[in-house]
Image (cartoon, rainbow, N blue to C red; front, side, top):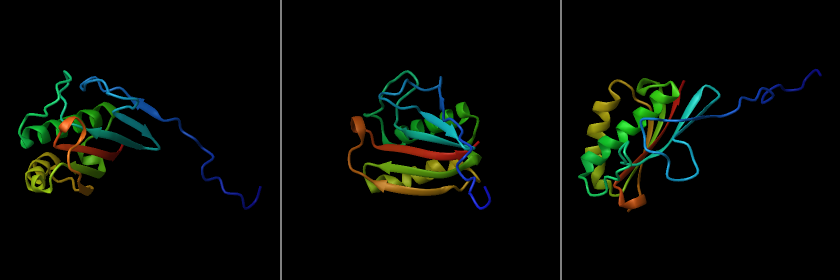
Length: 137
């Protein structure tokens, strides 16, 4: 009919991405989900592919694991760091932000997605950092 909008009429089913390089999710969620040309990476904690929680590791080691986990999820979904459009980082203490920013800068390279940092206090399992992201496919 004339004048009717066709926005929203083409639905794409979400694709739940299995990330073999990461430990199985600890709850009812996927590490990554794609749809509409985008991939959404769930919050990644410093958990090794073998499932070890790095809660007693120094902040820098936890941050490095989080960045590796986000990258593994991006790659499994068919994306990569230079396709990131938005990142949220949760830190247990804002004093850890400079160390994270330095590691993140080296990891992200020339990529400069929109970003937020949220000081939270203790994170799940007592972790010091968590990161979620959105990227293009």
